[in-house]
Amino acid sequence: MSRPLSKHLVQPQRVATPLPLNIHVFHPGKQVEIEWDDGLTTKTDFVEFRRYCACAWCRQQGLIGHDPAPESSVIKAICAVGEVGINIAFTDGHDRGLFPWEYLRTIADGTIANGSRGNASDE
Image (cartoon, rainbow, N blue to C red):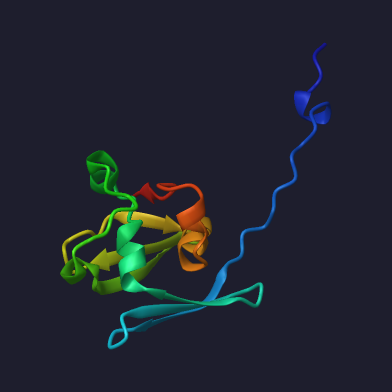
């Protein structure tokens, strides 16, 4: 008779990813302000979200983390994707990338510049 392995394995503890409470897009200033549930409020330039767009095309072209053209960094729309993150559509046609909450946070708080890149996924 076999026993379930789950009773004998040590389950890793997961650190809760902060979630956004409110997302405000300021077009004149080209910034996104995000209020997080851990009390942090971040203000991030549009260009940072475009710079770290990790859609399939940007990954294939090796563009994640590269400076985009200024005119391509305008956000056209932000849409919720279920409970996992947001989709950001840019005026240059990039509109298929998914920004999961954890990846969004690393961009918004600036830790992306010091750590991993390309953790976003496509829909």
